[in-house]
Length: 156
Image 1 (cartoon, rainbow, N blue to C red):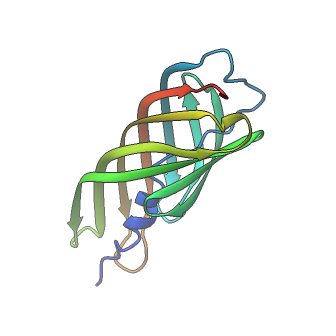
Image 2 (cartoon, one colour):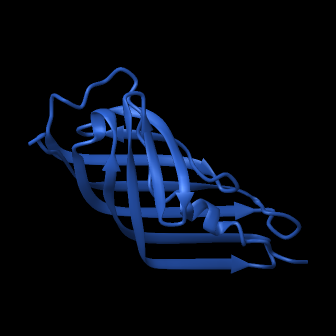
């Protein structure tokens, strides 16, 4: 019996979230706190994200690598760079389960369109668990939460 928890990095790669506004405009608030939450399938990187704060929307996360995601918006996109600071894993081979948590920081990189002048940074946490992980990748979820300051600069 072999516990398969090698797919944990896939869930962790999505440690940053994406917000895709659905008709909402971020122009009314130029500086504030942005919070993101996402619950995703443990075997599929990326997924739906809910943003609240300066941006209030539902969107999609595009995972580029274990330290970079792209947040795609209808009128532009922004790069998010993230760095883990602490992680923990627990494996129970008798019950064929595993769980993990990870905490770190993120910063916004370059953006395009409406998001070209946004900058920000904050902290994130990831928690995930799976069952039935002895004969395959397991069944479970990853929950991501992130919060930090976002602001929009001026063009000039």
